Every structure is written in structure tokens, then in C-alpha cells.
Image (cartoon, rainbow, N blue to C red; front, side, top):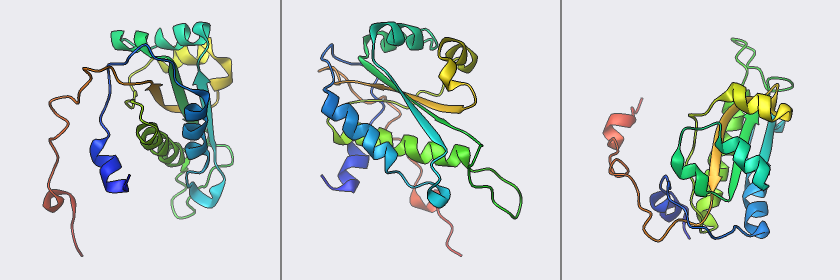
Length: 172
């Protein structure tokens, strides 16, 4: 599949089948995250795979979304300021940018594997840290529910609404 086809076909999936996700597909998604470019390639990022019944129950309790109950795998992405690139001109730490690059690559890899996901940013970070102590010290940027889309899954009505290039781009 061409990259342009991949980004056009991807949508925020919020309806999943009960079908389990194969280990090979999860590993391919994680590998895509591992290979994501980060500033100075220091990779100040951590990934968590919530897959056991207990872990899934806990992580799903951190979001208000009923549709999360159906998902067989959730991948969390977080960045840490420790060791991350800091821009010398203004002292800006790039851990959140690096974590977001990794997260975006994961999101696209999910689609490439024939699965569905959506970037979940609306979750109780403090509850996640309480339930999963290894997430402490990380800026949790995303949770990705991962699964096979249900047969009747479809993009939201807002999916096709996009600004034009003229509205987004300024040529200087």
C-alpha cells in the first residue's frame, strides 16, 4: 500500500470485533514505534502493552469510553524529559515531540496491519500512574486501543472535513 493510500484509509476506529490480535501484528506495531525518528535518536520514550485481562480492565477504567470495553489490546505511549534533546536556543525539551512522533508511527502501523485504532488522549493520567507504577515519570501522550474493526465500523461524520492546503500552508 502506498503511503498516501494508508493515510487516506486510516480513520479513528471506535468499534471493534471480538477477534484477538495476533502477536506478530502487535510486534510489528511496536517495531514501527521503536524505529520512529526522535531528536538525536535518544528515544526518550516508553511503550506499554496492556493485554492481560487484569491490565485491560484497569487501563479501560481510566477512560470514560464504553467502546473501549471491546478492545483486546491497548498500547500506551509516554516520553520522559530525562536524556531527551533540549533545544539550546530556548531550553525547550523535545520529549513530548519525540513521544508524539512514536505515537503517530504506531497509529499508522496499526492501519498497515489491517487493524483499527484511535488516538485516545482523554484519560485519567493520575489513575494510570496509580494503577501502573512503571508509568510514573513519563508524560503519557496517548493510549491506542488496537483491534480488528467491527464489520459495521466506520469513520465519524467529521473524518472528511479537512482544511485546504491554502488554509494550512504559507509559502515564504
